[in-house]
Image (cartoon, rainbow, N blue to C red; front, side, top):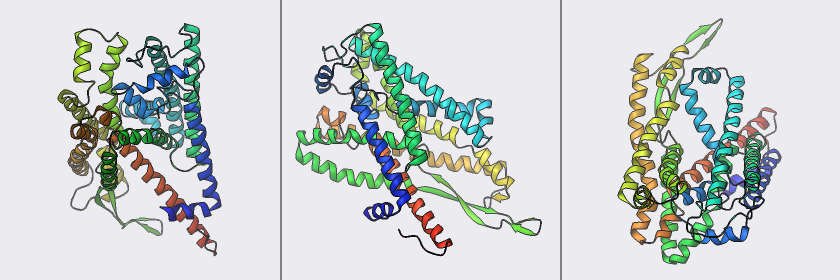
Length: 437
């Protein structure tokens, strides 16, 4: 890794991209620290000391701590990620969007524009919800301080507009990183949000027990290595292309493979499951948090160690893993494309038999992938059972979502840097003078 960074900084064009990415990340973090107008910063800091668990933990993780601070970039990248997932789901269900996806770059540009519109709509909805919870005390249920200087409609509207505008700026920053920086911009920003709260999680465990922190860091290294191995694991289905003649040239006759990852769904099922399992608690808090239903939800679904919570969480992760894989990978379409270009799986007839074989193989791979995601999500609960401290579960630094995001984005960025270095070396070779890396 250090050698790769040295080689990357020696390349002028790549060094410029890395510095540009770091500059955008710095601006993004500044916007997450900057409070929105009308926010009582002192009251927010006092309320943050006593918050933890359930919906607040999810907000803390996926916003880099910005949403609970009611900052300008409070919503972060959450509305864009939600809009992207929804548009991806609608692309499979709506024929018009499916046709746009097949139109190439022009259709993809239209889909991107629809994603932006949906991002703004979701940002308005989420900002309104957060400000309403801040006015009624739902975002900090155990704190009685007023986090807004003025809880009137006009002042609240200013905070909502500020957060929505901040979401638009964040969306643009992510696009700038993708176009002029290194890595995927949106993935890089969510990586920054998750890593931003990592030091506070580690310090919480250190205050609990330095020995527990040492054991946790050691197990974290092993866990990260295991996640890297699983993220790289894939089933390679051999594909043979028949020879064909076009004019005086002969094409095909090559052997390749179709890679099917064990974790084909990525981090999406965990995000979906975390969001859905937090909805009952959010709904009861918005309704006042009193009554038998609210008490049942607070006892069974607010505590992450309760068997009902664990069973519901694992069931949602498994269901969403199968659902997301089924809509993002179409065996029939892959089989038809292979048949169109003269490709076939050895021993399997082209067309429908190939599609059935791919569907069967993908189903067999999805089962260990879902079990892998479920096992990662259980790690904070296991740590709570071992250490018997609620802060461990609420602020565990090596939770499944955290490790998956850090490892996934890290691997993707490293691969892109290596690809650009290799491309630069080939360019120098073709010009007759190898480029210095």
